[in-house]
Image: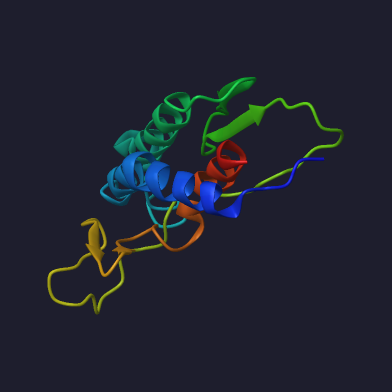
Length: 146
């Protein structure tokens, strides 16, 4: 078993996160993809599809061998996105995340808002950036980094 070079891994993560994941996550923040519980016209509005498409475009841009991406749709149900990355190790790892968001809420600091990505002191502000919206990015990205 080879030893993990944490310095090299950290440099890789910093560069790829800043150059790849963060710009896509900012695009994701701009999409008002409310959960169907809060947007009765979610299908017609198309925001959940836009969120899925943004994430899929990002995943497909990565140099990942063994990648398959599939979107499954049933009438009157939000889309389900499956990302599979085949590897050489035994076993499987399952990550869960979702790309729908809770309502906008009030009380945003000046210059910030739910659909406006703002990076301040290295932190991304905007709806979906700190709940499960980033989870898919973090899960896939962790595999790329390793």
